[in-house]
Image (tube, rainbow, N blue to C red):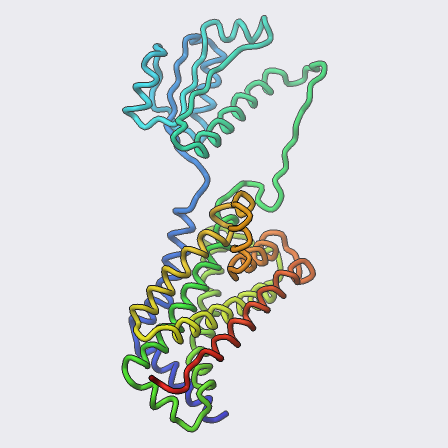
Length: 368
């Protein structure tokens, strides 16, 4: 154990001496959590709005003011000619147009019904659908203010309640996925490159013929990255809570233990990559390109897995970050305990054991 501790101490010295590695190890997670936390945002604000108001009455003006007061919209221009709408969409990057017909208020008060046309830019269907819902909500709010205190026969009032994310913020959706992305990429990349570097420099032979067991040499190389990844986890959680307003409703200890399990799994993948490559460039290419795409596609935080074809859903079950994403959402957002995530934890544990055993089995104690 004294020799083993000496190897671990040596690896810590190697890591802290290499400034580039330290920048990648600590700088990359901070940059990613800030960049993805703010850039990956499904909230739409300041969407350019056009109003074509043929009525120019009290009701149409009141609704227009509600749109102006809402931070989801920014009134770009008001026109009085329907023919200008399409040209305005082409030239001014408009997202939505509201058209009030003539006699809007008169129809509303006397006929008890009035029409409003909403035109959206369908080039981005998700944005168009979201903005239409925002607009319908504003119009519905105005309608409720008109009928306040009045009893309308056969009226159905729908009350919507959003659990776990009542304000529909982006951070609770993306932060768990970003945690999986950052922890897996950093651990895989650092472990794969550090071992391949020894091969390139010719020092792997010295390590393999040393008195200590070769497998303990590999474990010793992975230990610094394990502890430093836990520090990364702490930094990510602090940034998520303070900067992005991400809540942690569940057990912090359980969250750390589950993250440690993913870190060990990722280190095992990095060790496996190091066994398959002989150059740092190849290791980095496999670690970055081979891991980033599956994590982005099959974790579930960017693209709903339920919408994918069955074969792709089956492939997603082989990606560790998918199970970690489910676990972290359950702990951080829903405040659930181990009883709710034991199945996902068991799957992640099985993956970790399999990858670790496979990595050790594929490890070559003799250099070719």
